[in-house]
Length: 566
Image (cartoon, rainbow, N blue to C red; front, top):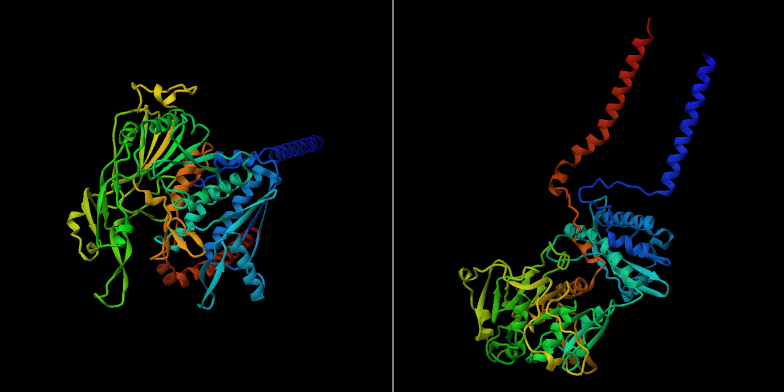
């Protein structure tokens, strides 16, 4: 019996060792993980997997979020650390990262020099207030961002979403939601071997290179940007991945329309900024009033065929920007005060679309509403920008006067809600030149006319000002203001991010932009309740475990005493 028992124990030991070795071999060669969170916050997207798998060299990431920080930024740091570890599981040693504390030095001059260097290289600082253990409040400078280096290239990544309309907790949560997108987008940009091409269309009075200067500079970080005049060559747009038509003021000829139409039929993407009303704030600034007139650029039938109609009207909105108004009496020194200007709606960016998610409000000027038209079942549409719930429509021709600032609007008249201002169209479009003679447009070219497009997409926006930056003539040259910057309120709206995301959406085939749709639920504590009950919960967390251990020890002693007492 003793021999059999020994043999049985030896057999069990060998089997156990074999199982341990087998499990160890499987675990070292096969990565396996279950994400049991409801919002799948630890599951990386397929686009992220593809980009990290394709890395051919080392990516170095320096993350400037270390040292003493408020709790919210510590949570952000932990999320970045977890994300970097997930990246390394996929990319292996091709991802190298470290956390850096820019405020580590005790020498103030050295610390300020580091701050200046980070700012000049592209990281945006933020001032935060943190409460210490004694109840005092200390202000600190943080640089919640990173530098990604690949070979000889470096790109900054700002990680903090700063939407003035949201609370600090919501901004931090939105920042954590977008971490994967920000890092993957930057890695994709810096490692791209072949850049896509974007064209700004010219020839019909569109915005020039100065009024689109800021967005051109930002787009140029990702794409090769050209300016193309479409008047002659029927295939002139074929080499571009997307084109931008920014505010034509002259009528499109039929041949120019044909060139754009056939570009779309071949699968080309277009970002349209077309205004149906012609009005200028420059005219208002030099006088008391001006007329808003219809702006017919001969694109109405083409856009109608694709599925939208930009109406010849102007939207007024209770949710609007301000303009400076002189309130001084005649002959006195000018005194300017900000006043709401109903013709400048501030558009809320919806959270259900990757283009507009987590964006600040979009500033518009004299926008028109857009109708969805046609019955093409092959085309899907989605509204991505609209007015607020308190807006109204004014038809042109219309007299617009600065004196209207002093008038009190009647709330009853603002009964129209969520009027469309920007629309996505996706699918297979029919050519506006179907069943029409087109030989005169293709003479001298090898051209194959298409009546129906491949699967493609376009975005139609009824307000040019969304892509237009301000230009100031100075003694030292021309100064281009950042897109979306309001010099009166010193606030930067989300216009640039909207246009950038719109272009990414049109040309992105990897699905990177879809990562922006991820949403993590913010489970915040009730601060007032925390202050009221903190003593109670401290006692529960410290005293109760001790009491439990003592009771358990007494119980064990009692059981032992009964068991071994004869």
